[in-house]
Length: 303
Image (tube, rainbow, N blue to C red):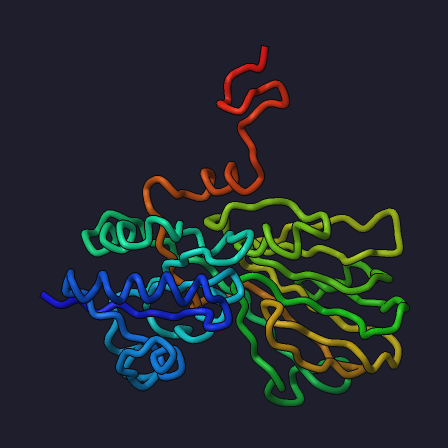
C-alpha cells in the first residue's frame, strides 16, 4: 500500500536538499509517496500539490532543516493533526532531532509504528489596542500562536523599556529591561535558556517569563501554571516595541497596547520521537551531559 508522507525542506541549505532527494529515491523503491508544497516540489523535481491537498493527504510530515524550518512547518500545519518529524540539517536542533545519516531507517520505523507522538502545548498571545488594552473596546488586533516563545523587545536604540507585568489581573511588578521572553517548555532550550531561564521538559504544562537584561538585581525567571494569564503593558511613549512570534514574525506594539499571553486551550502541535531519541537523550547529546570532567574519550575514567 502506497503511503503518503509530507515533506518540507529548507531549500536554502544544500544538505537539506540532498537528504530530501535521498528520501524521495528511497520512497520510490519502497512505495512511499513524498508530497511537498508547491515551492519545495518545484526545486525537488517532484509533482507539487496545493497546500490544502497536502494537509488533507499526508499521514505525517518529515521536516528537513534546522529548528527554524521546523517552526515554519508548525505554522503550516497549525489546526491540522499532522505529526512532525524533524531531520537536523542545521546546527543545534532541539526540534529537528532526526539524524541525516539514518533518515531512511527512521522514516521506515515511523511507518511501522515504532515511534511516539507527543502533543506539545502552544502559547496564545492577544494584542489589545488603545486605552491600556481594555478588552471591552472590541476584538484583539492580533491573535498569535507560538511553539517556542513570544518575545517583547525594544528597538535598535540602547535604552530600557519599562514593562508592567500582571498575572491574573494582579500587578506583579514593573521591570526596566530590554524586554521579556514568554516561553513554552518546548522553547525553554531556545532564547529563554540564553537569557538565564530554566530547562523544562515539554510535557510539563507551564509558561516561563524570562526578563532580558533586566536593570535590577531582583529580576528572576518565573514559572506560571497552565491556567495563568500574563499581561504586559509598556509604560511611556516608546514607539519601537516589537512582539515576535517564534523569532520569525514581528508585530508592532504601540503605546497603550496590552499583550495577554496564556497556554492555548485547544492548539497543540504533534511531534514524533523515536525510542532511542527521547528528550533526555537529546539533552545529554546537545549539552554533553553524563560525562564527568574526569572521563576519557570513551566515557571511562581517565586514570
